[in-house]
Length: 301
Image (cartoon, rainbow, N blue to C red):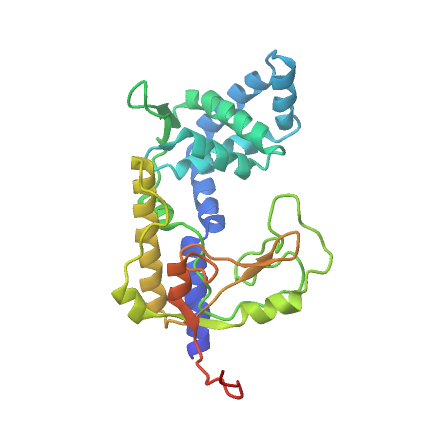
């Protein structure tokens, strides 16, 4: 049955691309194979927390007081595991600050950067730079299994759903089959008030498809200047991933559904990265309604 097939394929997509699932694979691997490194990391972080610092730094580090330090160390190692190739230290620090759910954004990134410097002594990862003028980079030294490496290589923002999203029944639901999330964008903005779930459900159930003729004729171009090696590399990765998602959805029937969330002002945003009808001009042009209908009764001007 086609509907059952779509549901099975959707579950496979979520387990292949969703970092919530991949994190669990990585976490289990680290807990099973690196207990000594975890313990060493806990000891290093506790020493860091027990140090004497100037007032503003002491206040910033206080964000970590009361947290489960073992969990913090494991969370850092899980995040680092995604650095299969060298990545900018600043970018990794920002990503891990979000992963650790620290409170103040600027202070969180500073504190996370210091945590990385401390935990680097475990040799779980390296922090280095090519020359004195180059930027610091981070690369993992965790010897993951080939299967987990494959999952990480494929992990990125979830593609649109190929089966109709689940009904949204509260503000902490996503429409996806295997995970939920807050429907309100932005850290600290979640609430249980009215956000017009009926409207979101209607939008979630609007079937779309790719304009494959357009994709075959027009090549996606960057909308920003590729003026640094880092930007060039990031664009190559994004473009390669995008065309991979186009191909995947085409093979899986070329019918998909965008999920939607709201910001704190109630504005609605479709949740897509590689495919998004609210994205760039190219992204808008790639998506069209799956079911065409003639519009009648509209006066000709």
